[in-house]
Amino acid sequence: MYKIEDNYKFSNAFGDIDYQIDTIETIIAEFLTDGLKLVEEKQNKMDQMFDKIDKIDPEEAAIFDQHVYEPERIKNIHLKNTFLSTGLSYIFSQFEYYLKEICLRSMDLFDSKVSLDSYKNKCRKKRISLNRPKNYLIDTYKINLIDKEKEWGKIENFYRIRNYFVHSNGNLINDPKIDQFIKDEPNISLLGGEIILTNEFILEYSSILLSYMRIVMDRLYELRKSNQKNKK
Image 1: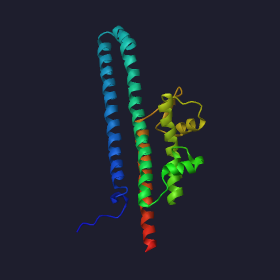
Image 2: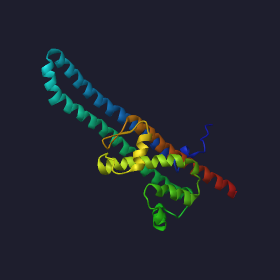
Image 3: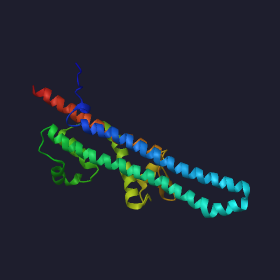
Image 4: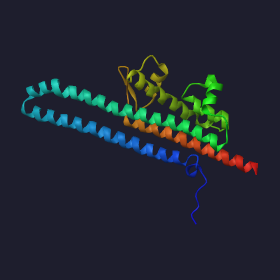
């Protein structure tokens, strides 16, 4: 007889969230792969056109370069960054939504009367929207996430990068902390104050975000099992 494992992945509380996380991983990878492939194909087409003209008439190629090739090359750069910034916004919006959903499911899991909204009103000093769900889970259900503070620090930086694309079109504005973060990260850079994303950066931080949620669900579920065992 097949025995279902007793962990968060197969639980009524978190099983469907875990499934959604798997889906999100697939969507973001496919979206970026298809989008960047499109940009690459467009640029390759322009490169081939330029090379073809240049072999026949270098002077005509120079005119083509100025009026067609270079404007299209710049458009492709912006198109690439649009795909990447859209992926960044998508993955973080999913993280914010499902982390709040984990808070909601935890109320039922622990039979708690303390909601995320009531916690927000009670603890005004913890109103920063990104930190609120994490603080709620720690304070209300006493799960230990101290060993994941390094990951949370990365999530906070990713959140700030996302906000720069949402609020200032990817332009860094007087933020020494994020400026240093970008200098320390191999897969993200600055060009004239504009944040330049890469596929590798989005995928790396997507993994960090989704892994963090899995860890939170695992610890909540195991804590609930431990509490039930101790009551017997």
